[in-house]
Amino acid sequence: MGIFMSDKIWTKSLMELLNHGIEHLDRGNNFDLRIAMISIDNAVELAMKTYFAKNKRVLSIARKDFKTTGMVPFPKLLDTFTNFAPDKISKEELDKIEYFHIIRNNLYHEGNGFTV
Picture 1 (cartoon, one colour):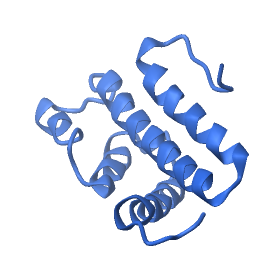
Picture 2 (cartoon, one colour):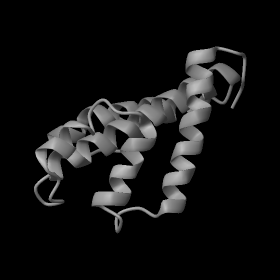
Picture 3 (cartoon, helix red, strand yellow):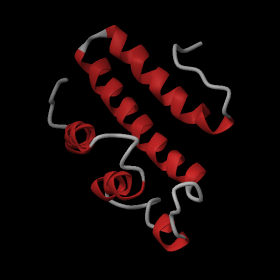
């Protein structure tokens, strides 16, 4: 069983991804560190999308705006926090998430031998 658990059914997949990433992080070799970064980044992205999906009425997200949060560039997903939930996470933290997401993209899509 992983270290992060929740009784909310909609968090199951993202918790599995997060725990998977942490397991690889604990191994510490270059391959596992790359897999950890990919899994944790995927968990963060899934968490953001799930948050908006489960809170669209609370956050007053119009259907037309909500439809755009599903398959959008990652920076636009981060902007959704700025626009609809600015009290949940700071812009500085969003910038950090974006920075690490860019590194994750390099690791995942370019396969250029980077290590974490």
